[in-house]
Amino acid sequence: MKHTLSVLVEDEAGVLSRIAGLFARRGFNIDSLAVGPAEQEGISRITMIVRGDNKTIEQLAKQLYKLINVLKVQDITNIPSVERELVLIKVRALPKNRPSVLDIANIFRAKVVDIAYEYLILEVTGDPGKMVAIEKLLEDYGIIEIARTGRIALIRASNINTQLLKLN
Image (tube, one colour):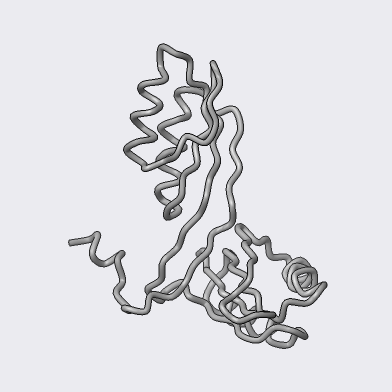
């Protein structure tokens, strides 16, 4: 199972390297990683997607707390949260099929950030499912390059689980 970990760390050189080393020593791959400044100056938020069962992830969290500069570790997998990613997709868009590509972009609220005779670069933001869906639709036109950020996430203040709303 994939787990989303939110880790607050002091913004110091080498912190990310120590965290990555901890995962590597234990044979864990980090599926997604995003790092950036948090709400407080001198603090960074690291959002990681890691595979493992609950017990293993709990053990990893305990190990993370032992590292210098790690302030807070939360497994937010089962906590209502907002998750987003950013993807840049360079897609073949010849004049004959460009309207179809632009229709797909419009449906997914993607922005055209570069245009050439044969290609478009689209910027797409949203939840991970949206990224997979647009990528799948654009495959038929020819994806030339793709660059994807790591997932970022924050716990919902409303505590409403939107996944449950989709089931109704």
